[in-house]
View 1: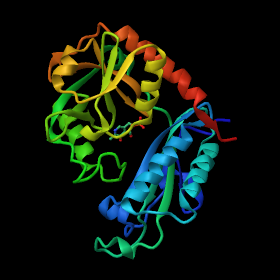
View 2: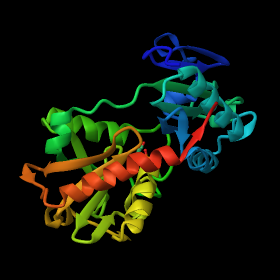
View 3: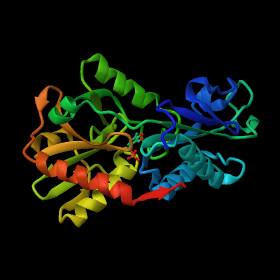
View 4: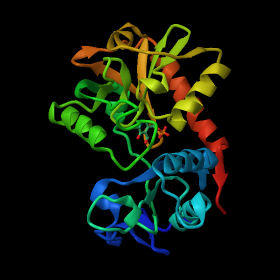
Length: 294
Ligand SMILES: Cc1ncc(COP(=O)(O)O)c(C=O)c1O
């Protein structure tokens, strides 16, 4: 049964309204962005690709040396518990594992107990007009850090690069930003993956160009192969988006969303019907890949 549309949070063993939830100010997640997280789609009272999300979270945790008590299996249980308490058919989870409380300095060895937090909120409510027209993107002046600076494949709580790219887009009147890597190749958008559809070919930047391995991305690639498209992970430049028949972004919260323009020039919509077909197939597949929590 749907309890309410108010976001809730699992914090320190209790589920409470998210607006009332607090974290200790000496948690290194708060002080330094020292932690990892997942944004997860809830569909039909189930959690989309739960095991894949847990794998990405635990790999990110291993990459930065965070291991919560009870392991990531405990984080999985908490995600399920929070989804049950959320009660609605659809929604969105933010599952966070922070380094935990420690000294005021950065030394992570002072943090003895990583903290797990889970927030459940309603699904995205896209603006239908915007969805129909496609998003207006700008190219961010900020580059995505290289893997040997801060690996974009680690979904860490350090999102300042993403936040500032989004801010740049919003302050320039656009919806989102395309973010390039140090070589000027497309990494992704501020917090979504990028695709270009050209004829029978679907291209997306390779992960080593600075993209997170999105689970929406993975699902779309699987579906596209089943639909007979040629799917390629390769380096893409801005030109490839102008040359495409359609371009779109993917993410857990937004699903698939078409791009309408880039830096003031329109992106072709001739492949739009096919993008919408992939979008519908994604919604159906998301149901099939959801793990029931009841
Ligand atoms: C930087 C970044 N890229 C891409 C994505 C899309 O990934 P997913 O489809 O797993 O939500 C996210 C999602 O949170 C993200 O933070």
